Length: 195
Ligand code: GRF
Image 1: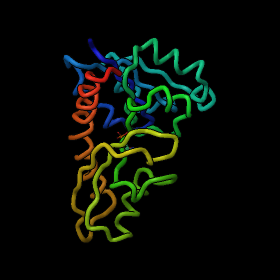
Image 2: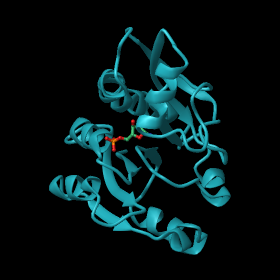
Image 3: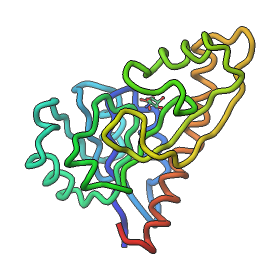
Image 4: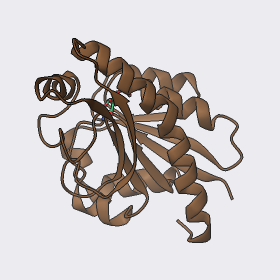
């Protein structure tokens, strides 16, 4: 039976776009909802251009189980992919989607994660620390920023003289290449162990 993915995204939505493209016409799963914490972000328009329902919730509403769970249910949500979502996930949602909700982070966790480690801050920190490699991490979501068990990491070099933007582009290429495929595998594996 077709599985349904909800994407939570509050930014430019480049990963959301890749996921939407990948699952368009896919036999296993489709994206049924894009949820954002901010109105007017590009991720919303991208989802609409794929004919996918979108919703914007403020922080107060997002914290309410009686609002969010029925919304996810109405979109038959089996799996949640966070892609540049800005808020901590409340406990009720972590529990309900245990083993069915992943996040992507633009560095090799557990280094360079946690509060304040987002966007260019991450790549600046990696360069300042003189790391020789960086990459992306897909991890299960728990109640702490960037601390859930790691599903998969992909590595890339950090070259001497790299600017944060150059490194960001290299990491983003990995994210775009791997995130949709990882989601596909996780959903397919869960078929033996129904989600
Ligand atoms: C990505 O780098 C992701 O790792 C992080 O937020 C960024 C989202 O970028 N969690 P985009 O909005 O998908 O372009």
